[in-house]
Image (cartoon, rainbow, N blue to C red):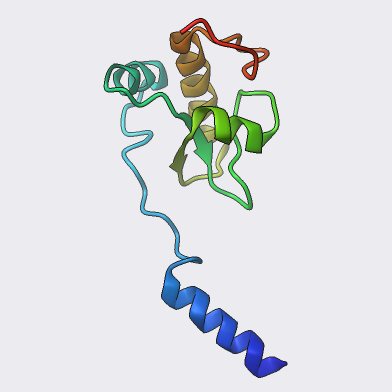
Length: 111
């Protein structure tokens, strides 16, 4: 049993399944609304998510899996209150740009 667990761990590590994703350009701009606008203008309409067991979408109510399927994920590292505040502001602006109801983002959007 112990050998099987070790072998599985080695396979996962070698495959990259346990690797931390490289930090994307997310949170590079001190203004989350401006960063959301720039991303939207370049066709990137994904919501910003914080890494964890499953992605967390700060500032956006709803089931994480439904949100991920609907909007896509722009992953970023960080679990500090500052990164959560930044991601929440980014996500609210992105939903606004897409014409979505911020309180009910899984409802149909205008755009």
